[in-house]
Length: 127
Image (cartoon, rainbow, N blue to C red; front, side, top):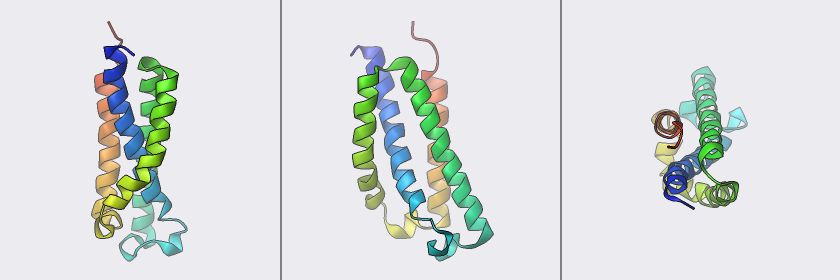
């Protein structure tokens, strides 16, 4: 693995890890009857939809950048490690934060921000 692949792999690994933790967070909001009180109702449903969209956006962006810049075996290993570590990252966040409106908004913003970072910093062709 050369330097260009390694510098692309680290942000892609962070994206996979963040997407997995947000996916675990998102799974806790279904079915709708089991959502925490702050996320019940139509406004909470909209926030959950925004979080789901941000997770999909982050995963698509990470796979797109990884496919251009990183060898497939490294992508598979990194994604597998993210599947193992994502739930642990989720558990490290206190429930009063992760199950609140600000926690969902922060998670969606972090996902979207990392996707934008991947596109802007890593999508340029390697010279």
